[in-house]
Image: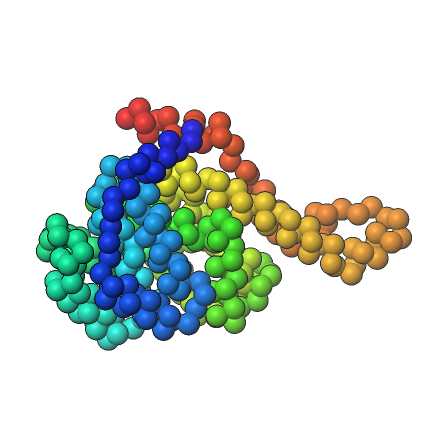
Amino acid sequence: MTLKRKAETLLEDIVVPEKLLNFVELHMNNFNCGAHDAAHVHRVANLSRIIAAEEGANQTIAYIAGLVHDMLDSKLIDETNAATAEETLLNIFKNDMITTLPNWTDTMTEQVIEICKTVGYKNIIKENWNPKNRSIEYRCVQDADLLDAIGAIGVARCFAFGGKRQRLMFGCADVIGNTITAEQYKNQSSKKGSGVEHFFDKLLLIKDLMTTTTGTIMAVKRHNTMLEFLKDLNIELVDGDINNNTKFQNNETYNVEEKSLFGTLLEQYPIVSQAQLEQQQQPAEAS
């Protein structure tokens, strides 16, 4: 199953007020983090609109919500600054949106703020959180945000964020695995861990958290990209291990898995084929 790319012809002309763009740029640059910068929210906004076009959602709401989705993120901003940011957003929506988007309404503002406050991994993994009961626009933005956390971009963002938090690049001493809870995720900000651990604690789990058909299709390719990266990384780390190199020079058996850093963990995450994806999608489409 592949995307029909309806979005190429269905994308609406969305002109964003310059005041909103400037606020987003300034706000994101203040985080001083390459993983959460203005480029990130622009990618999420564009992905949100593409998914919305494919899913029949309101593209304008999805795009604007994607653009501001990190404005009130608790891991990036404290409560006081979040309240100020929300007030600024509300003023822009009330006074400036109408200048470029004549059909903008107070109801659309409420939807965008609600999405902004609820989108995020910390919510989607809560036991009582069912994203499929929420608006389709929320689901488009949620999937878009998750998509930007995986794939080749996800690899880059993972290590950029790890550098910001002064975490090791490699190591698997404290992998939580696929049973991570919302509380464990919340507490991760206080632990050092490593970039590699983050793949097993979060990034490799994202594929199964998508809430739209379009998002699921897009996530599989990005998921496979991360697996290929981790397999290559594992081999290169083994190659750089002095003990294995000595064994290789002595003509002894050179087993890539023997000194594997995380090869065993990777066995739990096989590459997803196109046929498997189609099989997974059939029950959902039939219902």
